[in-house]
Amino acid sequence: MTNATHRSDTATREHAGRLELSTIQPIPLDQRHGTARDLFTVWFGSNLMLLTIVTGGLAVTVFGLPFGWAVVSLALGNLVGAVFMALHAAQGPQLGVPQMIQTRGQFGSVGALLVIGIVIAMYVGFLASNLVLGGQALASLVAGASDMPGIALVGVLSVIAAIYGYDLIHAYTRCMTYVSGVVLLVTFGWIMGVHGLPADFLTRNEFNWSGFLGTVSSGALWQIAYAPYVSDYSRYMPQDTGARPAFWASYWGCALGSFLPMVLGAMVGLAGPKGNLVAALAALTQGIAPLVLMVFAVGVAAANAMNLYCGALSVLTFGQTLVPRWSPGPRARTVTAVVLFGLSLVGAVLGKAAFLVNYEHFILLLLYVLVPWTAINLVDYYLLRHGVYDVASFFRADGGIYGRVNVAAVTCYAVGILVQLPFVDSALYTGPVARALGGIDLSWIVGLLVTSPAYYFLARRSQARAVAYPARV
Image 1: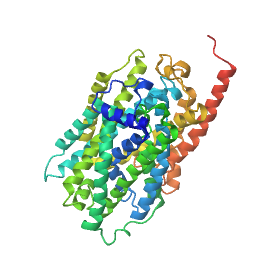
Image 2: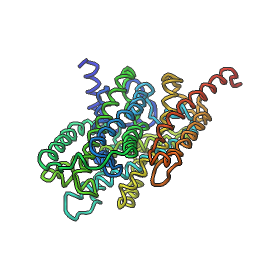
Image 3: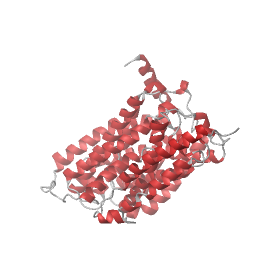
Image 4: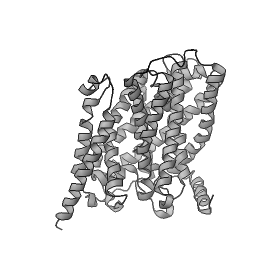
């Protein structure tokens, strides 16, 4: 370990108990700290939780795959999807601003509000989902207990971490990397070696293309859904962190941290009693269930702290767009986090009875609206501007050199959503192409393939026109 790395690690730990003073403002170079290793633990530790396990369980319950094919499809989805989230993560050290602030560079200051509003709804949805699972896990420890005390406990832990901010969340997930990682391995060993797997475990269900591609999509979306988060947790990194170290640390942290608990979810979905996956996990780990459920419930609080923190930053970004002179501080972040928690609590209480169905619909909806945004952001950052942005323009009332609305980006975003519709297969709507393919959903792939080149050529043409016909002052 070099002296510079040691100093950076020491600074990170010293800051963990301090209230973060910055919110959406650019992070000055003299306040940068941390190493690429912190990016691994923040994404590995935050994914070792119940919601990840439940998502993996969809492969064998909702999508009806046998265990072997479930593992293959989960691996493929996570490995492919993590490429996109990690490319976003590498932007943070370079620009030093939250991801939604940086989105102004593609969509314009006002145009970005469309994406920011959708992302805020996403955070509230994940918050509510995590609260439901945390409450169920803690309630299952006591026969007949209500899930409300568990929901409240997870919520309080989440709010505290979101209020203190960046460094406490990094410290929280660093701790969960080791604690939850060990418990995850123990859980695998206990289910296979102590409880035992059913004799027909490997032969249950039959391979089907609809389920295989649906599971791949679930894994890919799990990763892509982190794209609006990632710069928020890398923006304090020193600029000399380097794009490659930031990319690979985020990539393997999120890919492995997601894939392993998803495999556990597929195992529980096949080996445990049908119905509530949390209850099935408790039944399969009888003897150590309190330890397993408590640790994974605390992991839910870590993930929810990240949702609250990023959600608060997105709301503050939305508000600062409407009031450009406003520079929100920690008090604004605190109030916003509490309000978002209240909204998610209402959603958790109202939706917990049909949680699995609601959650499946929710993640499919995210797939259709996040894919075009990630395509536009990555094409703009890596292929058009090569990471060079005027950060000061992000905070100007008129949008600076990026303007209020980038018509090319907004148009491609809308087209990217519309072009997916014929390929959609969901309980709410099935497009004609998906129906003809027997329920195979290829929408997100089509969204990427259409949006990326469309934005590249439209944006290049707009840039060429701006050079040829410069605006008169």
